[in-house]
Image (cartoon, rainbow, N blue to C red; front, side, top):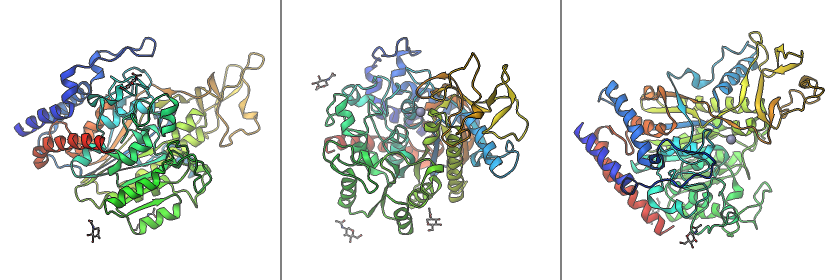
Length: 542
Ligand SMILES: *[C@@H]1O[C@H](CO)[C@@H](O)[C@H](O)[C@H]1NC(C)=O
Ligand SMILES: *[C@@H]1O[C@H](CO)[C@@H](O)[C@H](O)[C@H]1NC(C)=O
Ligand SMILES: *[C@@H]1O[C@H](CO)[C@@H](O)[C@H](O)[C@H]1NC(C)=O
Ligand SMILES: [Zn+2]
């Protein structure tokens, strides 16, 4: 117990040293009326302390004897709200010709469920960047920012460079403990959620140097997200990086294998640079842009694997070319095999990123199908991992405003109209949206009957919508957290989203939190010191 307490104090001092000393206060937010409950919300130490207090209480209930989770896999369904889960499970069941409501997504069988609160420091409703900062770096942040405390307003390049505002992610904590790390996503690997694992950037949109420059900043000072992934810690240590987004890595003068032009204005080919940086370490590496190359790499695993299977995001599962594009389950499978070679264990982040995109376009079927794909990926992971030494956590970054509504009979087509009618006798959909591009203007004071539309029920047919908006918005409701494996029970309850990485680190006995177990407890302060030194060195020699 004593060594635990010493390690908390030391690690906290080492990791948050300057933040604790300077009491940095947030700039007035750009958001009209946005206000934090306390100026301390701009400090990482505020959120760390909030999480550590919850862990103290948890630990008091569970007792001291703990065995660590060697491997931690975090699955994140972007925008996977609770109604999305209920509708996706019904669709899963109905595809198997059952009523559907009784079906289960793979992770719905997990022994522990919790709820996470997703608001950000200056936003009632989270975006994928501030929420990624919460569930990966353990501190709530400002909308649109990644890996930075809420002392940094969105777009503030200079402010993002102060050492005390820069956060380390749970992947960096795991690396500091000698474990391996990696990311898998169906979006560009530079998109907000996966970038939360490795980037510190004042604007989530700064995916290539062209974006930094377009915002009026110097990419040499504020490195773009792709460059951070290839050259900065911790991205430059990842053993596996799988997703989309080749265009952010290639110069405008280049066109990739599938015809997408590069977007970089600095003339750099970061895919080639990734390769040569691994060769400089005398390590083997493989780059894959096609599913066949992924399977080749799987047959003979290289030390490092980079797979970018599209110029932009991977296509929706229902619209993808199965021959050239791997499924999320396949990507997850290969990533776990890559990382399992480390005896100390690993941290892997897997995102089903396009649930969110489909919802933004009011495309319910695509959102549900992407959710089912995530469920398949989770199932693959739990088959590959041992329940007594691995932890799998499945959650979402924020909700959406799709409603699962009406009074339909048991087993009614979840993608169809309700059995019920509106007060004018016009049908309405079981899955409809509060807002978004699918709004139809009323005709003669009545809603239109969308079931009569030509493309009704087509995969790209938007469901009907109350409020017209170019993009459907996120929802501010809580998101579910499912946990399986060692210390799964540390995820029950209702808590701040920023507690998630602290809870994962608690289960895995790594990072700066309280109650690191066994020998790891003594190593913590040294590891934290090493991490800080390493990050400083990495900045000197990018
Ligand atoms: C950022 O810092 C640079 C160099 O210190 C300075 O020239 C520039 O004016 C600063 N920009 C802003 C917006 O503060
Ligand atoms: C590089 O790896 C090879 C094969 O594993 C080994 O023989 C060689 O000594 C290594 N070279 C360096 C500079 O580490
Ligand atoms: C990777 O290889 C293993 C055998 O080593 C195999 O079981 C697995 O299915 C392969 N993964 C994929 C995605 O094909
Ligand atoms: Zn979104």
